[in-house]
Image (cartoon, rainbow, N blue to C red; front, side):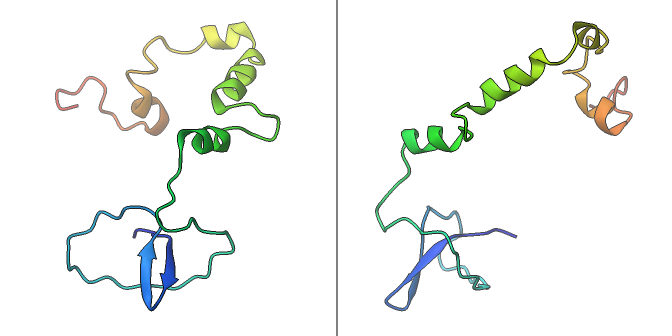
Amino acid sequence: MQSIHATFQQGIFKPVHAVELPEGCRVELQIILSPEPTQKPGQHDNAEDNAKSDADTNGKTLQERLAQLATQVPLHEWDSLPVDISDRLDDYLYGNGLYGSESK
């Protein structure tokens, strides 16, 4: 299911952002009134707004927060991680048994 934010103007639902649907396809709408203000038609997000949304209340980006968290992990814990963790992440997380099989 896809969620599309829209404004209702003059009897027509107008999506806030571009929607990738086949022209003329039929859809079913469930109306949930949004407490958030929507953008005006023709108004687009810009890079500055996107960068601001990545910052927390202290003004730190996600990357900065992750780097700060990483410093709190003792070095011996980092050393205990498998050297192939990025290659076999799914195997370590989900135990899917794909490692070593010919059809990855």
